[in-house]
Length: 421
Image 1 (cartoon, helix red, strand yellow):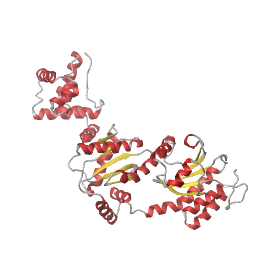
Image 2 (cartoon, helix red, strand yellow):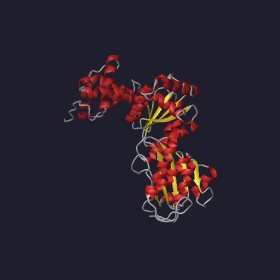
Image 3 (spheres, helix red, strand yellow):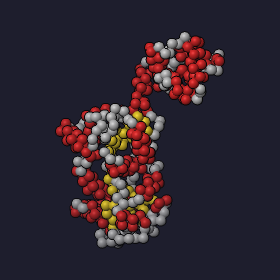
Image 4 (cartoon, one colour):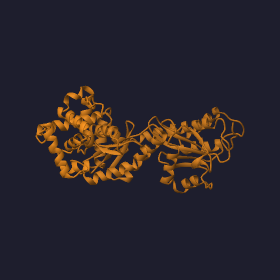
């Protein structure tokens, strides 16, 4: 048990029941600062509260303590970005979707041990608390009392933040949800359209359930509009969902693709691929384009990818899961495979790359790292050996579909391949 000093508690032994009385008495003021001041008095230690993005809400005592984090927040109201990222990295592997109150005296807290905690709902972080322990050892009930402190803050902060549902992030979430009432959807449509002009693109980045990933996601949805114009982010279905406006429309330009690469790099701490939808003109199409971007994020193995890059594969994967795919593979493909196996040639890869590149000889030669004359020779031999009129449109389409189906099956498609001589 720990000693309590200060004006709101009597020196001596205390228990969690007394913590409830102190903090819920402070709740009568309906003032977050009063609750933080009560924690300062109760613990007899410096206490601060920041928002989800580590911007200062309040701290007691309101004076410099010759402690870097404390004094920086007192003077500037926020922490440097590198400090925030260092904290997130420090607790990257903690279990659970949110931080419960915990004590740390290592790493970034080595100069001053602290109790950390988060004010959160089931879905969102609203703030962070820190109790600066200095040389005072952790008491038996300190973490339990810190949880009572957080619960009291939550009773004030969560309803207040929820009343701010007219934010752009909330409007975007209303448009994404299939359960939104028509009149609410209409309001959200007007507000988003008034702030962000089309054509649009959606970017979806799944987030994990660790506390650091949730904290990062909360930071992202606040910072995105500051980093990129004509942008709004929200959290929906355990994903960071970002709507970008003023796209060129049609398909993405090289400049837009490079832009999304930079955004994906910024989102890389989420440690999940980002999926990007096709451009679209009407916000009424939002849900369908969310599905495009979400599907892309789940199937891509790259840091980011576009729906058009993975779109055909989804059709073939669905088909392969319902039917025996071998009946749709062009019969010449197995013959080419067998010939390669027996003669150590590379006709299968040549035909595959040529088909998937839509008969672009320059691109095929570059991909295979061969001269165009070598490519011409191989294609001629394939035509002679296997009687494949691959330049004829119907045959070209059958071969293209076959190779896409084989790739979608990822070597488990059930196509019989006998590689014994």
